[in-house]
Amino acid sequence: MIRLFLLPALLLCLWQPATVLAQSRTKASIAFDYMPDQSKQRYTQRVPHKTIPVGNDAFILLSRSAADAYTVAKHNSELKKQWSAEVRLNNTETVEAFFTSPEAAVVVTHRADNGAGMQQLYGHRINLNTGKKEEGALLLEAPAKDRRVAVAASADGSRLLAYRYHTNANHQIKDISGTLYDASLRKLQDTQYNLQDVPAILSADVQVGNDGKQYISLLSDNMRRLTTRQYGPGSNEASVMSVLVGGTFDGQKVYIIDSKFELMPNGTLYGAVLTADEASGKYYSLKAVKFDFEAEDMVFAEEFGFTPEYLAKVNALDRSSGSKPSRLEDIYLTDLVLTPEQKLVVIAEKKYTAGGKDAPYFANELHLFTYDEYMDAAWNSVLMKHQQAPANEAFSSISFSAHLSGNTLHLLTLEELDGKHDLYLRQINTKTGEATAPKAVRLKMADGEDLAYVKDFTAWLSEKDLVAVVRPSRKADSLRLSHIQLK
Image (cartoon, rainbow, N blue to C red):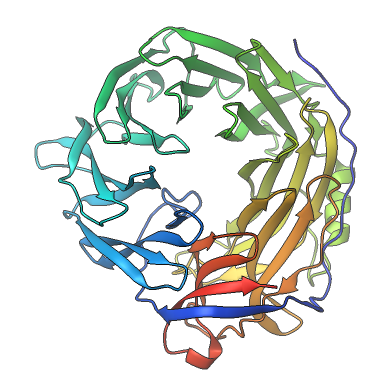
């Protein structure tokens, strides 16, 4: 059954001078050696979170320590190092994934070419209690000329799926195969997903649940159709849900330009897609869906149209100088968040580069769309921010870090507001959409050409405690790993 609902347009203006100051203190701080990752994935990082909380009073951190090595270190909340372990890389190897299970930290590396024409995935497992590193395990290999192999890990780290694509002469996906592992990187099963009944697949999203169920979400039919398949552990038989998202509407040919899928802690898969007009490239709509495989039901929110009226409201919120855009551009789906009341919050961000080799990067407005447990519209808003970074930093310092605590969504950004260069905190009540003005954390960040904040290392230990890598003005000669307490 498909349910359609009317989505109201409630826009909350959060652009205003940052006159609110958050009370905070730096509980602990230590010097931090930082080597940037020279990743080509500037818009979609493979490892966006390099700090992971472990329990209530500790965390592990992945950092590049040499041109051919990464270090995994465990710290307590006082920032005292409990252990560290090194993962060495060869000259074609990069980090593919970083996650934890209850017993171990796992780093997955990708070798682009092993010297014999094969690309490979290796799993490196490190005991969380002792820091002892096991010998790297070969997870998967495929011809180096094929599409890049990849991995998906379950939320609790108990399942790891290493997989590869099989494509035709037009580079369209025909099949996906792989191997499913447990938390100890022991092989559970070989997997084979026969997709040849789905035409013209250009994009696939793969996720695995804590129970070992696998979810393959496909964009096919020339980016017009969305298909999701669920495979049970030990089975190659699939439960299938499919819907035509693009097509011709009111004389306009519409296709999918961006998608985001998230398997939530409750085991339910959610998805969102952005569509655009084929002729003009203008953003057309947002569509969100809940995949309820237990009830064999796809539950849809009504399409949210990006109308001229919506653009006018967005432009009215933008009080920056200069001319206003004549169309929505450079908006990407970034996060799907499920609240304790089963509200789905879809977050999209405007981010782009001005063009050219040394052009700066920008991360601006946030678009939030929220639905209740029945995919009925709850509220939506636009948050205005204006962030800029030099080309060599890309999005390592700008964009945002999101954290859900109960019914409060925390958004942390590095900005300069009212002449204050600082980390700023926005807090949104997910029940009502009510939001605070941006609050300066009051770290007295260093200003200038040197990197002042590395977003990837931000992690929340609790609602009031976070760790971050920052460069305070009083110690501007180095980055610091800091434990910050909000009051």
